[in-house]
Length: 257
Image (tube, rainbow, N blue to C red; front, side, top):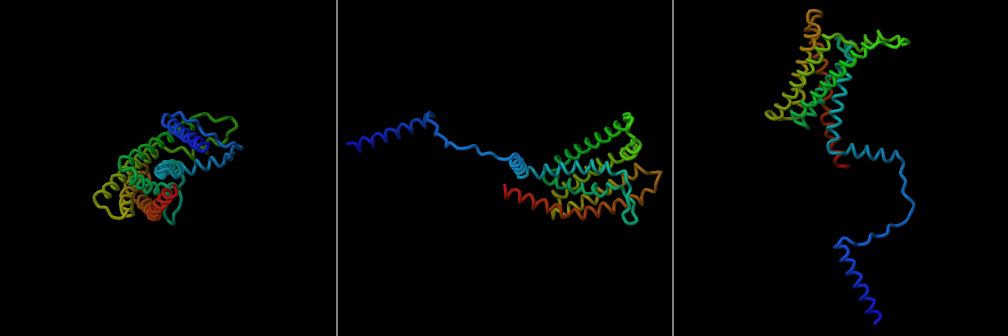
């Protein structure tokens, strides 16, 4: 009798528990009491960085940020001429030529429209940089500051060179996105070939426009165009393995996410 009563009691309790769960009135289970788990702040930060890096769009975001940063750095460093063998080129030419490969990688992910939006964003950033540099030069320096002339000489460019740089950038970047998208849709083939083909035309357009607008009537144009074009294509050839390195890193991120 006692055993039957116990079984009946358990059965009733089980039925009541099921009914409570269905109605949403079940009592919460009591959590185990123990000391709270404390994690150092650095652990939380690293975990956030890891989740950001392994997000599906993280590589595209990284490429866009890298592209805009390279464009701005190139504009800042363009005022120093350097020697590459017997060729005189701006110091910015190496990083600037690299941006054509980066925009092709963005084009591969976002398509032609997305790549053109990125180009327009970088153009706006360049305009902001050029305008604010001129504003900073115009501001009166502090009495103790003796580097105003050096600051203006390093960062300040003539309006002609600024216009040449912006016009060449905008035209050549749009040419690059158009050719890359057309080659991918109509010709196909390996990715490195469409990157090389689009860069070969767009860097030529960039060199002709920039040198022509900036130095026509002042310096011999075609020797400068040939020198810049040769260096830009050399950088393009060196950067071609990047397109496969990015793909490998992206696959690793997806696999470990």
